[in-house]
Length: 471
Image (cartoon, rainbow, N blue to C red):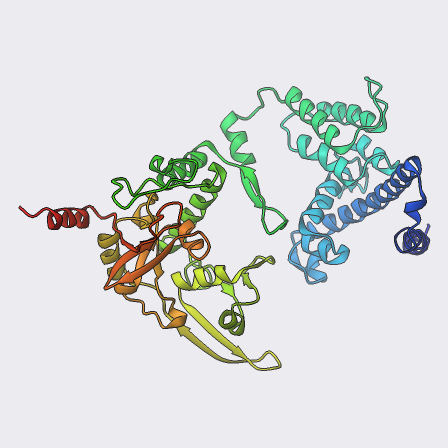
């Protein structure tokens, strides 16, 4: 039996020499186009061979962790909660890539019958052979397994699809095309899936229920992609939430609009957000309302709470970054200020060794009674042109609590999530004048640049009208 570790270490050392020559010595700059593509092709072949070993070993780890007795599971032995965590720690791959290795391993691994000790074929035996021969890697196996695994069709149908897709991956398909890349392989697998399961043994709704799901992706350019499939009723609920926040009244002019002091339509305002951006902001608003409702299950004995950590010195100086609990991507201090404005602040003081010395909590949350009063006074988001209902709005401290601003009705006003999040950068300014909110709009909205009292409350508007026109 070949010692795989020793062989791989030798291959790694040989490959390291090539890497140093190309990346450090700049060998690639001396190559012509054909030579560059040849290097890419050879390197990809090495990667696929290495991935075949990874898929096989991960499949074995997965099998040894699939035991009823937790104490004998391989994950338990190595102190990990799941196969994904164990694979990620060992390979140093991202969680999603580790998950792909597990999916691939389950599709091509051979199992042993407990009763007879017989080696059983893989779910996709021909794809396994194609992996061994270096024609596909992890992406190719996942492309097929993701489409075909779990279909409610007979074994013979799966084997027929497996054989034809493996041939296509080798460049031996009926159409005579060259070996297919993973994306094309996935497209062909999807066609096979539709062909084999035209109606499906399950009702359509049952299949949809099985395929529902939402996942968060890997951070890229400061954004976290969200992917998934919603059931129709879930999509309906989300659409209604979007409609509630993105009121049709928000559809205003698409360009700058200059308003004179006597303009009778102060609520007409330019909103430059795209529809997708508005729907993002509405989703955040809905999540904020849900977590604040008190109706969700508690976490660790408390309501679900967005935790943003930041060093106090950074908040004081206005430099540095903050972090959202559970998300590795740093965020701006504006996020920390926004979060602190709508919730409590907990100051944790540590010594030079990291030991927690003191914990102090400052409550910045407006009470239900205060909120009701502010809602009656403001009506909805106080920014002209924005009609997000009061129940969906947050209460902004006009003077930050960190600067001594009290959690008092004279210092609180209604802002939707978007305008609260951008109040320092969006061109609008707000203040409280003897307990009344005032707005200073951007120049394109108000060339006169005057502070103007504002309210969306029907009751307050009626009072102002009667005061201006006494009978």
